[in-house]
Length: 161
Image 1: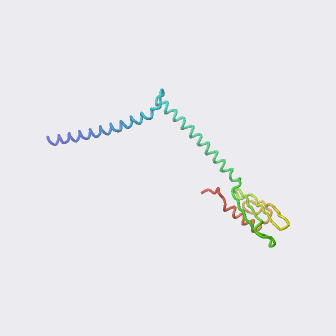
Image 2: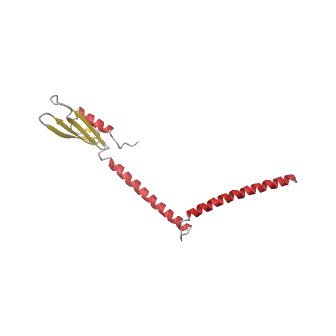
Image 3: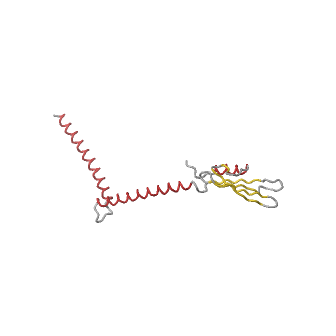
């Protein structure tokens, strides 16, 4: 008889704990539901959730459009000026300071041009040479022009990590 009353007490305690747990989770769910529907006036929960799902679909569509636009911009940016290298030098012994320069301007494919300015006492000459894939195109580069191109290649701010 004592064993059965202990078993009954254990069953009672188990059922009490089970009921307390269900009550706790029931109140939490009710409080969440109340907060979810607090700002709704005449709409029922179903229409509110359908409206939210519609907004999520719109946001997903806009996100995909933004991804496509960003991809197009990334593809086009290869052809924009991205790399710059500047070298100053003194090609003539009769002038003071590094008044002459070479400026390399390259895109993402290492295409572009070098602008060279040679300064002497009598005159300053400025000329350009085309660059294709980091190499000379029809004109031989001086060592300063090659140095400017190397600097430009190192200055690439758009490298993918």
